[in-house]
Amino acid sequence: MENQRLRIGELAERSGVSADTVRYYERIGLMPKAARTPAGYREYSESAIDRVRLVQNALRFGFSLKQVTAFLGVRRAGGAPCKNVRAAGALILEAIERQIAELTVSRESVKKTLKLWDWQLSQTPEGRPALLLEALPAGKGQSPVGRRSLVGRRSGQPTESRSPDREH
View 1 (cartoon, rainbow, N blue to C red):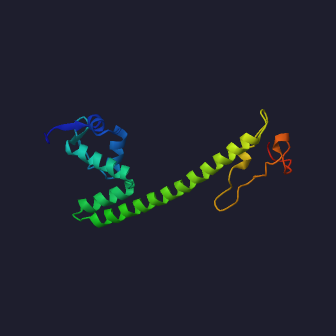
View 2: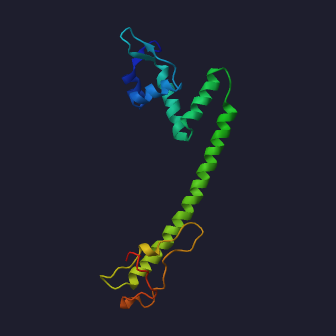
View 3: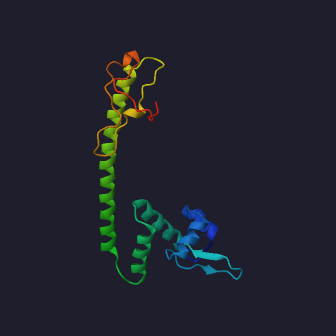
C-alpha cells in the first residue's frame, strides 16, 4: 500500500486538514518535499498521512509549529529530541496549571459578583436601573470599583453621589 501515491487533496482529506495546511507544512519543513508529476502536481506517499496526523496531534497537545519543526529537524538529522520534547511538555503542563489557577480565581469572582447582583436586583425597585455594571470588581488586587452601599436604594436614591461623567 505504501507505493500508492496521493495527490494533495486526497492527503488533506484523509488526514483531516486543508490542502493549504499541507502546502504550509511542506514549506516550513514539517513535511518532506513532495514528488511532482510531469504536470507539476504534488504526490505524497501514504506515510504522509501519518506525518500530518503527528503534527496535528503535537499541536493539539500544545506544542507550537516552531517546536515541532525543531523536534522533527533533530530527528531527521539523526538525533533524538526526546528529552527536549519531554521538557517542552512539562512547560506546557505548567502553563495549563497557571491557566487553571487563574480560571479558578475568575470563577470565584464571577460567583461573588452574581451574588452581589442578585442582592442588588432584590433591593432595586421594578423599572429602576440596578447599576450592575458599576458593581463589577476592579482589576486584580484592587477593590471593586463603584461598589456602593445600597441601603436606602428602595427609594431609588443612591447613597453615594455620582460623578457627572459617569454613565448611569
